[in-house]
Amino acid sequence: MASKKALVIGGLGVIGRRLVQHLSGLPDWETVAVSRRSPDFESRARFISADLLDRADTAAKLGELGDITHIFYAGLDGGIHAENVERNLALLVNPVEVVEPQAPGLQRIVLMQGGKAYGRHLGAFKTPAKETDPRYMTPNFYYDQEDFLRDRVKGKAWTWSALRPEAVGGFAVGNPLNLLLVLGVYATVLRELGQPLRFPGKPGAYHALTQMTDAELLAEATVWAATEPSCGNEAFNITNGDTFRWSSLWPRLADFFGMDPGQPLTLTLATAMRDKAPIWDRAVQRHGLRPYSYDSMANWAFGDFILHTDWDVILSDGKRFRHGFTRTFDSEDRIIETLGRFRAERIIP
Image (cartoon, rainbow, N blue to C red):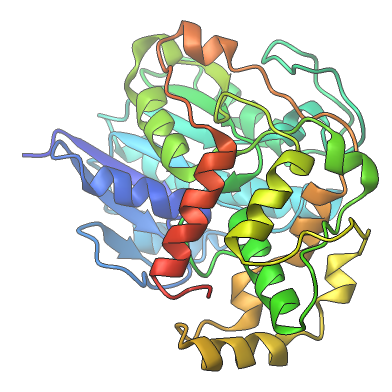
């Protein structure tokens, strides 16, 4: 019988989906997931569709969840920019203020953040970034959300944890912020056009050191952070535990797709890929792929953000190692393995 009950906010994003699947495989967990969409996979989790920006709808849909022991926040509405701060804060505040007062058994709230907590979106930053580094320029809704929890926890029995992954990728479909699908769709379109697999980012980004976080590793880390006593009221970087360069990985990607890697050519993917839906649809028909729409597969602005970062992006995993979560992945190997799963499931050719 389950002894813990999770509320996963953002249950079908690239992070939340894998977390729900991971929790569903743990016999001592019961899971309730909140998402705007219905799941496209079998799960023993209960899914609730709610507008978390609407306090009344949140209360109506989540108001009976008095037995929640853990809240996992993996929601997102737009980028880190000022115009999105209020909405993203509300996505956390509304469900917490509805559920927390009536959940006497609440133990921990786990907040998902990321490398933008260190200003990696603003330009070159101190690396390896550590959880003790000072905050960067606002606005940044990560800070607003964390400050809300820091204030809310005062005098309470529960605690919070914040996790900071970087460039999350994994096996999840219908989540355009999945880096691996950006790569897979980009390669598919170029191959249909008879083009080589040119690296589309900046020259400096091709050679800079970077990191990523596999969604499977992150799901395991999230449960660890929710249940390890020493993680209470602490933040942790969670990457695969290594670094890589696109210049090293790119020939392997080209080989996976049966393409020539070509010479890097800096593109703005959000512009260059905007009109390529017919080419993707042709590939879907020709290769007998599952009929996912082009727009649901890849967020090209996200691809530009990652592949145009021409400075090192390195978060230190030392703290999470010292606290006991030591699992790592070889990022290059894991990317190729996961793309292979997308191929086996007829998501990409």
